[in-house]
Length: 269
Image 1 (spheres, helix red, strand yellow):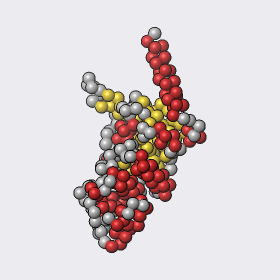
Image 2 (cartoon, rainbow, N blue to C red; image 1 turned 135 degrees about the vertical axis):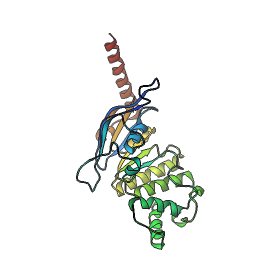
Image 3 (cartoon, rainbow, N blue to C red; image 1 turned 90 degrees about the vertical axis):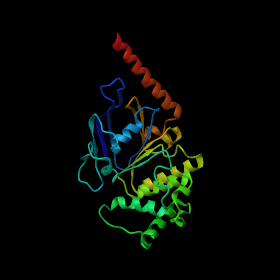
Image 4 (tube, helix red, strand yellow; image 1 turned 60 degrees about the vertical axis):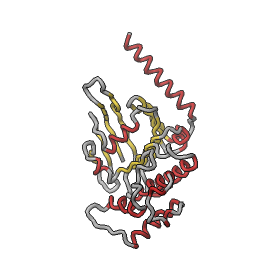
């Protein structure tokens, strides 16, 4: 579905502030995969998302994607962000970022719906309102009765659920979740994760989810990645992941860092 080859991202190259944010990242994600991604702050997780979404340009390497209706994979390394937005959905940690608060719920959904109909005029008629209500009922929040309310009146949990629904309704080939439950209370976080799993199955989505919640990282998805220093240092499949605990992951990380330190000492003599 998506293939990343030898990807490098460097900020402020050639200056005293040079920062290698990603180095030689290689990753293949199959259609329908659900990856959870962990790593400390500055490990390169969000930079990887930015490179995939097109908000930063890599210094080297390639990004390829294979859409469901396409015969082969396409090189999107230099494709503009707005073009990728037609088939890559992204949800951020802040529940307010995915919706326009001062617009009505109906208008928010209309804007999202038009993403898949470039060049066509679509009106907010009764048929369209019924379609929106039908989908909003899936959230179980009563929002189907609030199409004329401004979204700023909704709670953070409601807005994140709405963002998730609108994103999957646009039928992306790839869904990037950037700590999308981190700003929510435990009850709403659980609700959003339940919706995420349901929508991923219903829409046959390929999902990549960044999280700092180890229970989520181990409990969800069929694959676990750990990033550190701009590199993928662990890639754990579903069978292996099912046997691991949070302390196991910590021990593996420490072993990797110790080996790196030992190698550095050997190189220094």
